Length: 548
Image (cartoon, rainbow, N blue to C red):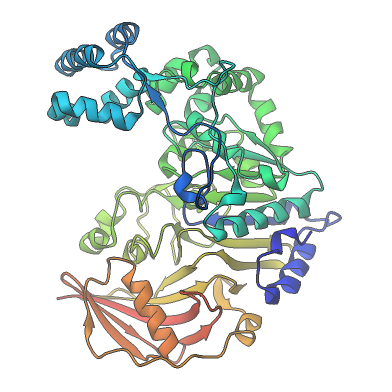
């Protein structure tokens, strides 16, 4: 039971074990209410045959290292016959380029090499392709990568060689959470966040292989969702084109498209049963809007299987797969902190939609948080009553750093949170009503190994975490200056960590036309939770932003 805690700090051991025992007692009458969410702030940095830069030095892994592309007369004919739109000019130009490429090389090449060959011929034309045209052409030019036995070469995973230790910590925690629920747990991997979910399936179903967790790829794609609910399984290839903007997948990943077809033919009830019989489900990283398409129909109504997904004992989300767990999603897409600050309140939520899985019901989630400087795009979502299609008032924001997980343990006795992995989690709340010239927030940072108590929708660093904090270290006070370009290069996290370590009472920073004041109040607390680079916990630092 404690295998997943192997690399966790000993001080968490007894507490987390007792919590799991309480939350996941097999004999618990309210077992349905017990659940563990493991929400990772990014795609896990994992050693695979295609991502050797994530592996320890001199690691060699047999398996698929890249996709393969080739130009042939048959493919040119196929592209001619199935061009996806009415843009004749683009079609003619592409066919001309492909015929030139055909004369230059008859060998299969990587996508990088093919792009360079294309740029040498007509870079402007390549740049002018729409996203649909680009995806169509390259999907149609892709060819299967086969081994000596003419079997598809799969991307292989070996977590033993991971260069990022935090990934292994998180995977061990996932494994332990599953095994606490079931002696022989099963995990379903959903890759709907990817444009090409078939390509992502190899890695998704191999992540937990070294923990001996039986993992199955769940072919829950936008095409499947549409086909299975409209009794149109034979239309799956066409639905992949129209709904997912992917093409030719039955040629490249035949085993996965066959699984998708078989799942479709088995019907909705069989799909719901498959999900209900699983211990856990894992949502991959990518684009949350794509995952939304397998949870809700075009009218934003949940599909028949959505509740079954929502109630799995263990839910894991990476990146977009974590963000989709909150009730409201969509307002954070393709927006930077600076853009969010410059938008009016109404515009800030123009793209918002209700439609997260709502397994996480404490607020809104953002990911890659400190690394992508997303504090103020998350802040912009707080206390907005005009969120489209929902009466939800968002009072709490949670920003999860890369290769870091916010863990939520729910049980009939109550819920708590803990942080595992590399860095930390930011908690934001709005303090008071926004003023005409400023916004006022409370900023907390919970480093890895922090435990957070949840009482009446308030979130506080646990007494146990505070009692076991490390002694303060003596570092020089911060220089008296205005820290510039604060929303670049993770500088806000660096500044708040420096304030925490030096017990600083105030600091001022700037980004373009915005001044950001950070002030310790009577409610602010600093605790050095771990000895890592971002190991200092801040509670309730006042953060005020004004435009010049």
